[in-house]
Length: 453
Image 1 (cartoon, helix red, strand yellow):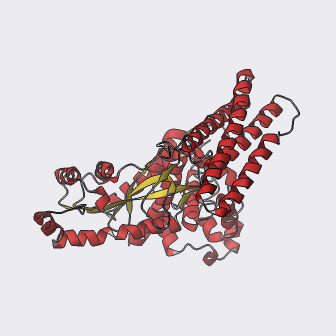
Image 2 (tube, helix red, strand yellow; image 1 turned 90 degrees about the vertical axis):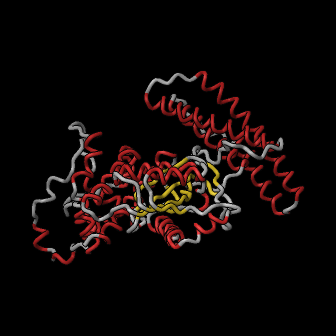
Image 3 (tube, one colour; image 1 turned 60 degrees about the vertical axis):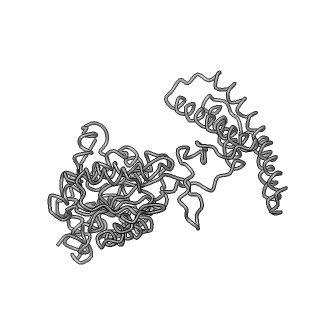
């Protein structure tokens, strides 16, 4: 059952008379954020989808939004957030949780975050921006755009490591399925022990750091792929015999078949690499997050990052006016139109000035921006420049916008350090969208509090 607030939140209690006001008084920044969150439009996306009078009362909408702001802005996990709010009177009053009321536990917060999903969080972000436009806090005259990578919460992938993890997952899944059928069985360790021995031998071989060592590693990986194929053959035979009867059985079987499909793909890609094909377009890098992709951004410290590509749009005042999460590594040149359309959707008009880095350069993109109504466009050209182009890029307006564009690097750094966008703790493309939306929502609330009088 959806509820907006705790019923006894407004009612005064004895505790209010015993505790001095200074103990739970909000800081100026939290007070402004609390004022912003009192706008009922934030609740509309949730009410529209989940307004029901059946079932147990869920976490109140107003409490949830405030708790998610604190979580993303403090960098706490769900498990650490609950005791922090429980023992901090200021946070408790900010979250509108009465003193005699138990703080929602971590499991409830995780489930409701998954339930709301990326669409609801995206609409809440849009409502915040529209609210700031109506209050004339932001105007959207200048726009700068850049891309970064939101890393998936995975270890550095190797074919051998993925094969080992895949066999281990399948073995555990077979054990769970047998137990659900009423058979008392223990996990078979024979294949896992073989895979573990291969992993240890790879570690010993790699200490030599020679070309011969690499060949030996590929040979050992081939042996692991052969062992994994035997497990897959057993899985295929078992899946034909299984007849799910309950919802739990269907869920177990579905996860079992998905894991088998991913392991089969890992086997194929490891065999392809052994055959000499190292350029695989749809390489699987994680069994827990199959949609994550290797992304090369040209960084010296990180040659390859594993996750999703995120485009950030920032306007004057440090507000993130739009974001798009992409699978893989699409070319920046193809993303300019999305940025302009999203800006127009919020502000009902194009920006006066837009600035991007040279990765976005394309003559068609410049012309499209001018046709949309943008007055000044700053996209440095790649390669040899004509005399007219050099003169245009040396103009005061172009140089001013180029200097202003550099500021988005600091904004991306802030989002990664303070609001959790360096690594998504939620797995999968859609859940990573939810994680990204919550981080940007918390960031925009904090920036809006700074801009408000």
